[in-house]
Length: 115
Image 1 (cartoon, rainbow, N blue to C red):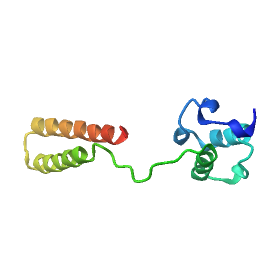
Image 2: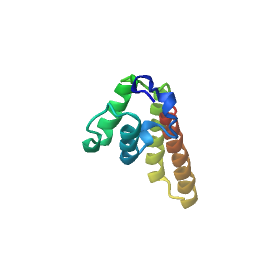
Image 3: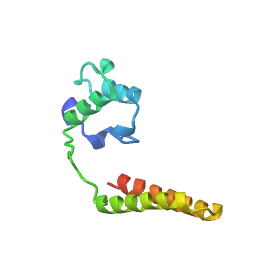
Image 4: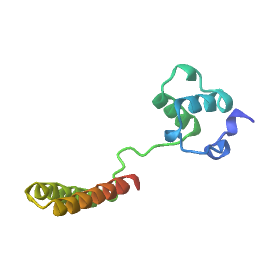
């Protein structure tokens, strides 16, 4: 395999670069991208940056989540619910409110990942 025609698709990776371990990234560079030198002494961020530069992958910096406004409103709801939870004396009502807060937290995390 020639070094000039290596593409991201030709590597046939099983998981994204960000999810790979440092050891896996080093093996990838040593075996398939010999033009990247000094991989054994680099940390994960440096290896990923070099691989992306080698493959010509350009990252969009400053990309904002399309759900940012929704996330902010939900976090506001969570804050008010937490304040209300402190005022409630019934154990059952506090438990219900706690569960609602937990669901909203999960929803905001899912929205943030959906980018």
